[in-house]
Length: 193
Image 1: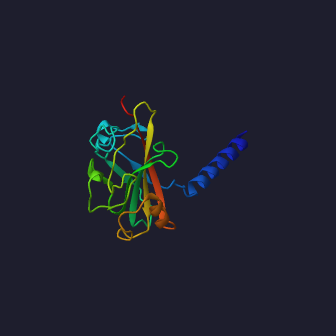
Image 2 (image 1 turned 135 degrees about the vertical axis):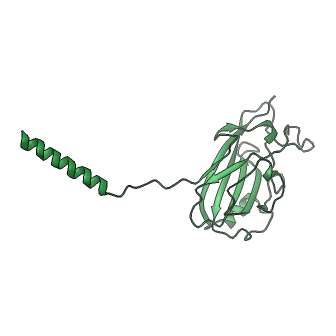
Image 3 (image 1 turned 120 degrees about the horizontal axis):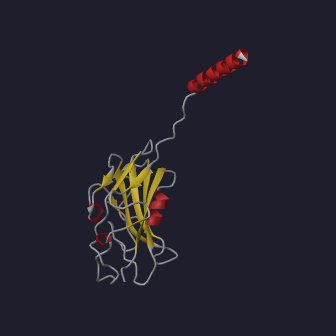
């Protein structure tokens, strides 16, 4: 009995030492996009909705972009692109509410309202509404929730590599073979009526 106990203790000690000697594989830090004011699948505030009532009566807000932050940038990133799309709007193509790119790699986010105006921190593309900055949600009345997906794309392109005014399709073509990673944040909005 002592011999069996001794053998088991020795085997247990050996197994423990062996397991401790194996390098622990850590999961790589995940590239993440988030907002301090809206959770993933959370509801955008009314102030985040568009304010251009001449364009459409669906605009009931102040066109204030929500604050965004990101972390764990992929290695080799030189710039970012940020796109905001409503897939339910104008189906099947969806509505592109914002396209900005040429965001330097040292930028880690945008303050509330910062994407609503031109900035030296990004190059404006061309949204469905022909805007180079944030254009907030404007879902129609009597419709279900619309989803607004912010997609942050890490690239190996110099921040000044792309010309202003690219559409979503043109940006996608320009980023071929230059993407280091992507992170998303899905938000929702619904007309209050």
